[in-house]
Length: 280
Length: 290
Image 1 (cartoon, rainbow over the protein chains, first blue to last red):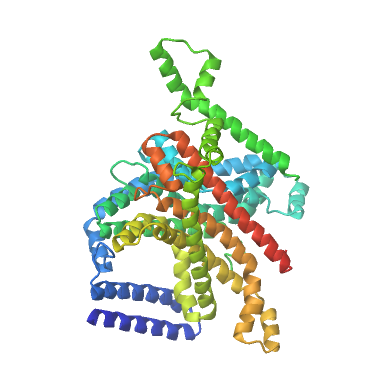
Image 2: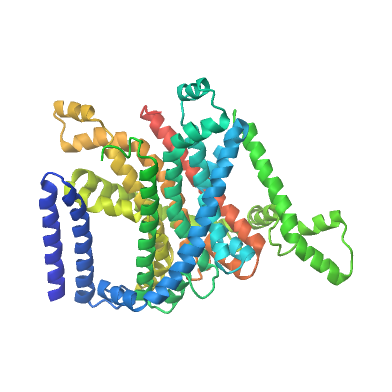
């Protein structure tokens, strides 16, 4: 009962602190502090609820237990991270994005191809491509190569569609200006159209980060060597070691945010001129 | 219709590549078989063999088509369209989880978006987490949700629907927050001069102007829901559903079965997105927005 009560108190305290902060004029510290306070409050309430209700750790482990497991098995988590994120997701992501980029530039030269490929690509982007996972595992074996292949297929279409759209994002006035400068196709591409396409390209790259991790993790459900995040999750669920599953989820969340944040940082450096990046 | 010819060309190219890849990928096995039987294969025999193997590495399109027909149309003709071997049955299982999860996710997402738009504290505390959560491979939780809910005694449709709900929830929140905020200051001022209450502002201005945003996120949401339902069928060895077909096919090396389940899932996704697109066009036209 004491735990439940303190959970309630923590919730009220955290929420009223946030209400107070939100009523004040917005400044930089409060914009960062409010979500952090909210997150911490949730974790405290979670901890108190698990202890107060005496939930079995098979159902929902307390955050403290997850933290303990996380610290105790960092070596294991690191090996899984390398296998899934670095070898599977990252290599596939780079290959898929590069292939889609080259393809987009090739498609862009032929309006006929573009008109045909864009609808097909848009259609393919909405399909449950993750279902390709068992096929890729069958073709490329249980190692990281099959995961990279799944990731390639998953990031390809969003990246292709975004890049093709981005390459169209110059108006005729700008292209005419390049013509008056006597710039050829390649010069126009590098000096005008590619820079103008960057916001779209980065949009595709950002969508791809999440898809890459999802693809690499799910593909491991269909067969993997005895390491990897997806493998660990499915095995630990079977052994009811739910705290280890949560530790893997923490790793996945950290990896996903870092991946996305990294791409967003590069975007900020490359597209500093774009209205969405200015004036902050 | 201007795009019809290019699209057909691209689709035809995909099929040609598919047939070509089937030859390349299945040829080693065909040659292997031939050497063991002690016969020399001519090129046409080789092609014929690669397109008709029982467990090919890559089944040719007509093999997949035949399998799909065998498990859908042919079974309907025999009057057993809903037997457990029919793909209609498996699609229905997956579809029901998808639809339930999508419905729940849309309702919850809309409610949360309303809360975020009307409550500044919620906006500042919850919205960053909603955006951050989109960068996280949430689907990793799927196996755990299934097992944990199973331990509490909830099994069947609901756990899968929960995963679908979770995946369709975030696009809806983000889209609806954007949509409910889309009326301009001018429009908001105008309803104020008409002395509209908060509820009237919501029903007559904010909600209608959020519709284009809602439908865009619904399309993303339903595709995500389907992925959620399929993945939800993987971990516990579910017996029915397109995800279960994929898993069973990969266990027993039944590539044709995998491909037919995959194409069925693609058709289901296209159908659902198409239906939402139709509702969108009709609704927006009635509202004078399109």
